[in-house]
Length: 146
Image (cartoon, rainbow, N blue to C red; front, side, top):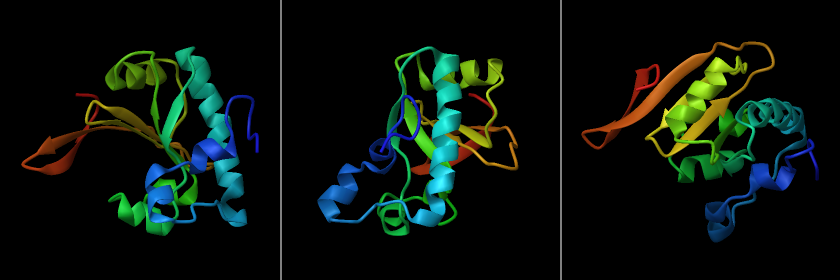
C-alpha cells in the first residue's frame, strides 16, 4: 500500500527479526492514521536531505518491540517513529541538516553514530535532540548532538 509518494506501508512494517520469529507486525487499523502522519512527515525529511531515505525500523508491534530491546513506551509501537539511514552523510550530519532545515519533529536521536531515530507527533513537536552513546555497556542519552 502506497502511503505517500515515496513511502509504502511495507517499508514501515518490514522486519527481518519479525520474519525470523514469525511475529505478525501488521499495523492495527487504529494506528494507521499515525503511520500515514509519519510517512507524510518523512516526505519533509526526504525533501530536506534531497536524497532517498531507507527506513531500517518503522512500526513495531509490542512483541517485536520487546524482542529488539525497545522501551515499552516507544513511539515505534504507536507508528510515530522510524529509524532511518540516508547517504546524505553521517547520522550527525543528517540530524544537523534536519535541524537547520526547520523540520518539525518530536524527538531526533543520533543513535550510536549508526542511524537516526526520528519521532513525530500530531500535537506536540517538542524538538528534543539527543545523542545515544555506549557507556559501560549501557546506552546513555546526552542532550544535543555530540
